[in-house]
Image (cartoon, rainbow, N blue to C red; front, side):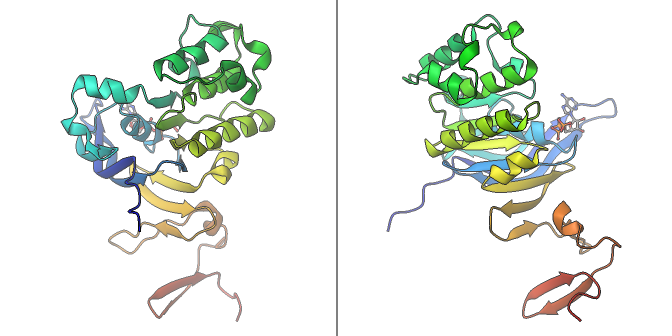
Length: 274
Ligand SMILES: Nc1ncnc2c1ncn2[C@@H]1O[C@H](COP(=O)(O)OP(=O)(O)OP(=O)(O)O)[C@@H](O)[C@H]1O
């Protein structure tokens, strides 16, 4: 039997701090997370819950303030600057403001060609642009593209190579259904070529296309939902459980019947089946 491939990203008890006027703020705490190649992971959570901070740490753009992050089995804290730069070249990054992950002076097809060159890949820039519906914009420079076109270009470029890890901050935020579908298909194709894909999103189209969905609240991972599988949810020391929004909808008056049977806890709406 062959051993399962180790996770590309393995985070243990991650902590990240941001400075604020009243002292450091814990933007992330106690994050345990494994991300494997070939999979798409979506991270959801309210504004300010720490999604962008988590992506920046996972994409090797920020070093965590505490905990351990292993990348391809190697501890991040043990990597020197040059080694980190080498690894970062193989991380695709789609910033929340897509222009931040593109070269300001290059035309669209040059953006993709440059990423292919940096990664030593022979991807066809024309195909990458066509995949996201930008075949007619190959010669356009960044300032000539709309916000949604920039977002699609950023995805086309970042997924070229393919990278080992593709990290995208709300990659469908500015897109209509047709364009969002193209972007999500391109991200899936990137995973099928062997990348680990992690994205943040508020978009049901994106969560529906992911293999698993992680919920972040106040900097803590509060739940996980695998496509078609059971979900996990954090239980705090007082016994409180955070239900995902669709499950919460089963209890509109805030009351539930709770039964404990054979090692399971079952929550049902009052009056159900009795
Ligand atoms: N550079 C920074 N300096 C200080 N505080 C920051 C900084 N960046 C983020 N924060 C704070 O850290 C917390 C997490 O922010 P983050 O941007 O990661 O959340 P988010 O879930 O991505 O939000 P959004 O969905 O609005 O983009 C918030 O309380 C935010 O105010």
